[in-house]
Length: 179
Image (cartoon, rainbow, N blue to C red; front, side):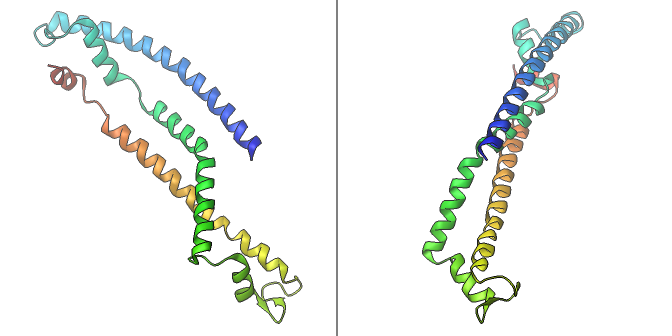
């Protein structure tokens, strides 16, 4: 598990580096487009941008035209994998607490009640009774699977809510809003 986590961290760092380089190129293209748009507004509609200087216009233009999804996607992936140890610790604590409180039966109790009949397993007649304990313990993976799934859905919901809440309008709307 540690090796997998290390490989994922290395891949995410490489993705972050490529995102950073891509972002620098996009910012250069946006600065070029902002200069062209600024010249267009100064020539055709100077009264519409009279309250702005060129630096303020570039900021508004960058906010409107910069692609935002790759940054949010990278942040979500980083959150997915960096939160995995915390999620596993929390799920283990919840399962141990639920077993101690009697909410979830211990694997030994489940193995004795459901899978053993006359000293033999019902599902696997040739298997010794101790194997029932291992089988029931493997069923705990159900809790981990859905726990990780729900936590990842929460991460996606958080980032998508933030993505849409911070969505800029059109360039004209943002210039009007800046007044």
